[in-house]
Picture 1: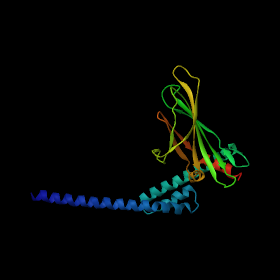
Picture 2 (picture 1 turned 135 degrees about the vertical axis):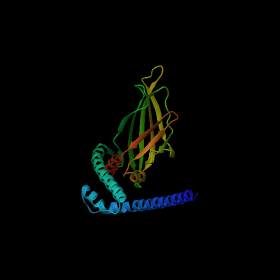
Picture 3 (picture 1 turned 30 degrees about the horizontal axis):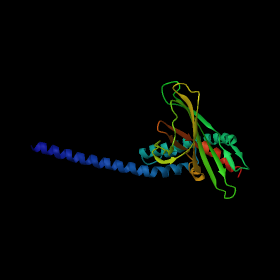
Length: 248
C-alpha cells in the first residue's frame, strides 16, 4: 500500500512539473511572438540582402524566435518582389485607361475572365469588370463606379440584386449593399436556354479605392440562383488611379 501511495505522489509531482514546463514554454513562445515583429523590422532597416537578413536572424536568442523572424523576413522579400511585379503591370493598365473631358472622366481597362460553374460544356460564366471615375469640376470631388457584366447560358436570367465585400479570409457575409442593375438581354435562345447578359454597377468612394490600393479587394455579386466573385487587384487600382491623377 505504501508503495502504491509513493507512486501516486511521484506521478503527481511529475504532472505538476510538466504543467510548469509547458507553461514556461508557452510564455516563452508568446514573448517571442511579441518581439518577432520588432526584430524583423530592425533587420529590414539594415538594408541588407535577403541572405544577410537570414544570417542576422540566426543570431537571435531562441530557435523559435529565429524561425518566426526568418519567416517574416522571407514574407517581406516575397511581398517586395510581388509589389515590383504589380508596379510593372500597373504601368500597362495606366496606358490602357481612357481619360477624357479634360481629365475629369476615366474608364479603366476591362478585365475579362471565364469561370467554370458546372460539369456541362456550357456551364461557365464569362464575366468582365472595369472601373469608371468622374471628377466634379466645381467641388473637386471624385466618384467611382465598378461595372460588372456576366454572360451565362441558362434557362432563366439570374436577376442580381446585391453585393457583399469580402474580407482577407474570403468570407463575404457582411456589408451587403444594393446594386444598380441594367436590364438583361438574351441571345442564341434554344427551347431550353438562352445566352443571358446581365450588367450591374456599384458606387465606390475615392477613399475606398485609396484604402485598398495596397491589397486590392474582392466582392461577391448575389442573385437568388448563383453568385459571382470578382477580385480587383492592387495593380489594377494603382494603374487606374495613376491615369486619373496624371491628368489632374
